Length: 591
DNA sequence: GTGAAGGGCCAC
DNA sequence: AAACGTGGCCCTTCAC
Image (tube, rainbow, N blue to C red; front, side, top):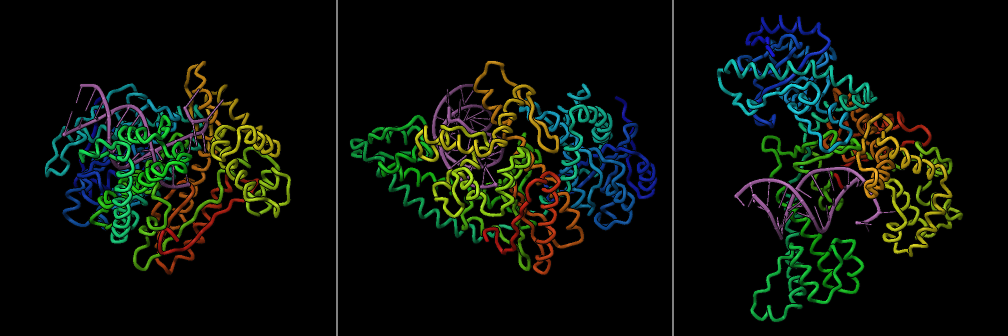
């Protein structure tokens, strides 16, 4: 492919180019940076392509004249990038959005992301990859050479071939979008694509903001856990080596407590009937009879705390900001949920000693909001089950109300056991629980578990019907969808019984879990607009929870905005039951 | 040494 | 096959 490009290094040429570019409907958009972390490098190039020709803007000469964030010379570019039109087409736009926001102080407007679109079209197919090279090859059947990707973009003079490489990536985006949008339309994914694209800037801003982690507090907590770890490790070591008396005579029985095989062997020597796996749920029943098993479980707990939530997380504190800037994958799961890594701050233990380390900066407050039982409300909406809906409309404790309905007693006569059964079932039906698992988790006999589940589904006939239909539909359609139209595709052999039952559970769960993700994403978009011009910043999201940080003086008004945005987003998808959001203002994540 | 796989456990 | 879904991270084990 012949590439027509122009390298721009001065204000006059830039102004002229921007005047032309702004008349386009779509522009391929890409940046080249000297690092992966916007706090650690500079933007070297910005490429904008009509598909026919590509403008490559070298920011280095501009940066040498004045700060990019305030540069008057860049005003036309800033205007072009922030405008909703032309639509900027980028691959993994979050990356470019972060750099533009941090270095140019520009919030990108009007984005089409070929990475997110490709993920939506793949509909959960784990075999598909979504690098620009793969996506280009899949949709355009042309090969893209990415060998220059790791080039040195800080050199004072960039070679012609390097500039051409930069131009080519941006030029690819226009035809790529044309192919992708056809497929999005054909698959009914336009609405969900917009939902995703609207979410890019809020997430980019969140990653730049980061979450403040109090290092001193974290280290204090670490010390406490370390002390109990060494104590528990010693005790477990002694209890385990009691079974190998002759070995301990030689004083060489160091059992690796983290080794599955060594611990299993030691337990066997002690006469413990070890199950096939030594996972907590299998070991739990044995813990009462065998103190060594209880000790092992205790050890596992502290070991996990120390390894996953130990010193390592402190290495993620960005030296320039003093904060944690995790990486959020917008379509982290096929259901549409986010995933989070480096570090994963969606899995910080709920224990107060850990959560309280994540706190507001000086003079700031955290505003913490979460959806109350959003997945069950979605299930009520989907199933249209009048009893289930009534349980929410009553406004009383949902699980108690459900127990009263299922066991046909007055709410005030519901026993703790009955409430617990109802709660576990309410929770479990979302995942497609079976009676075997229900019996296991409640300690009920199989027949008693079946009896309670029958009562449950007899009470909620509409819910039962919806779940059965979801399981039936996924087998015939081989797809499931959320309220926004997000799709998950299932591929399995006709006679693979295990795969079928898994797909059936997925068919029930995906629309619910995925609609919850839809709602959160919609809320982030609505919220972002409301926070404009305020001190409020997004710092973390955990599936149904949103955490903001704002000046203490703006905490109340921010809390109000947050609750309104989350409710409004929920109400776009849920109308038959109320959407409830719990909001609190706190100094720490814990409180 | 490095990397994948398996087991285990944290979150929602 | 925990017949309850989605992730990420840590450790050991094992192959290269």
